[in-house]
Amino acid sequence: MKKIAIFPGSFDPITKGHESVVKRALPLFDKIIIAIGNNSEKNDSLFPLKSRINWIKQTFNNKPKVEVKEYNGLTIDFCKKMKAGFILRGLRTSADFEFERAIAQTNRFLAKNIETIFILTTPEHTSITSTIVREVFKNGGDASLFVPKGIILKK
Image 1 (cartoon, one colour):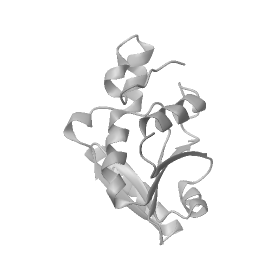
Image 2: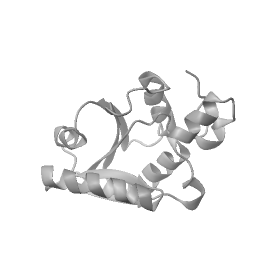
Image 3: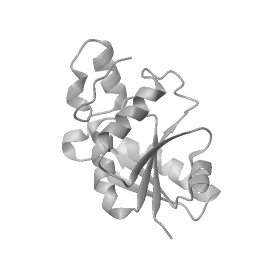
Image 4: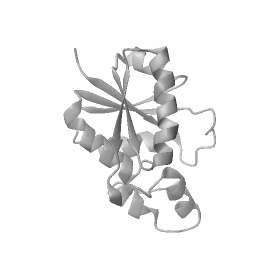
C-alpha cells in the first residue's frame, strides 16, 4: 500500500517554511498531496486560489511525488477520499504544537487509521507565517524574502 500524506493549509501564500517541510518529508512518503482547503475561519484569502495552485506547482515542478489539490470540508474526509494514511503538519512553535495536537487528536477519533506526522520547521523558517508574508506584501515590503524562489506575489 502506498504511503500517501496530505499536507493541508490555505497556502495564502506558500512560504519557504512550507517548502522546507514538504522537501524534508518527501523521503518518508510515496506521494504528498498539498491540499488547499477552504477554511471556514479564513474565508478572506488575499491571493486567488488559481495563483496559490500555480505557485505550489511551480515550487515543486521537479518533484513528481508532489501533487496539489483543492478541497472543501473536513481534512480527514479528504484523506479518506485520497486514500491517504497520513496528515503532514509543520510545527514552528510550542503554540503551534498545542493547536495542532488538539486537531490531530480529534482526527484520530474520526479515523483511527490516519496518523498525523509533525515536522519541525528549521530555525531560519520559524518566524515565517503566511499571515506575516501577507502583511509585508500589503504594506509594500519585500515579501520575496519569505516565499520560494521564483514566486512573484501579485493579487
